[in-house]
Amino acid sequence: MLATVPATAGFGVAELQLDIDDAEHERRHATGLGVATGYGFGGLDVLMALPHGLPVPLTSLSDQQRAYVRGAPAGICTVADGQVVRYVVRPCQVRLATVRAASASQLAWDAAGKFTEFCARRVIITRSPSINYPEKLLEFGVYGIGVSLQHPDGQLETLVEPRPWRTKHTPEAWWFAETAYGQFLDQQSSPYAPTLSPAP
Image (cartoon, rainbow, N blue to C red; front, side, top):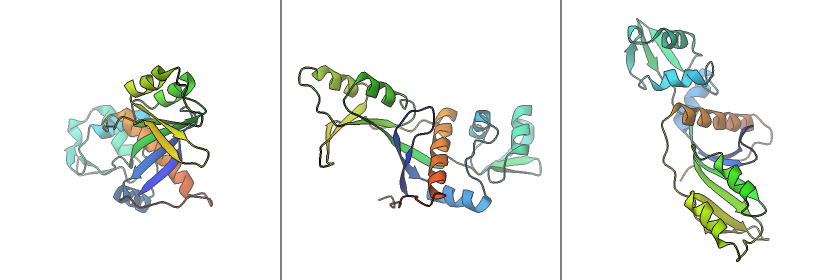
């Protein structure tokens, strides 16, 4: 399913477009697991070192890794017969971060730049760019940041296409997806949660 959520604190005011992994979302709901950051960011380092769905001997893990998997919340992994099996996977893909601003300014560029390592980026502006400074739009384009102009009737005109994003398999990227998923879960528990649309 597709969802739009606000970015978490520390990233400024932005909207994130998520592609929720329906199977993982349902699995987590069934096990009572929400956001899988475990005991902090280091837990994702441990999980990324384990293959998904395959048993790994505990003797092959470091002391820190064994301590984590033995104390991990239900739904993340199981430990039995001297082996650990990881079940948890990234709950969503963050497709696009959208920042809204009056103009294609340095502040808008900086705000979108916070998402450089995590997803595609776009700035929606409400004031037409100055024809005297076309290099500003070029700068956005060089760094892969899309720019769209929102007209008074709400219609969006794409001035610069955002650069397509290739998912990075890093603990940082997984952590970012988990924080975005946490925002999604918060919306679901709200009486004003938006209607979700199925992925095409």
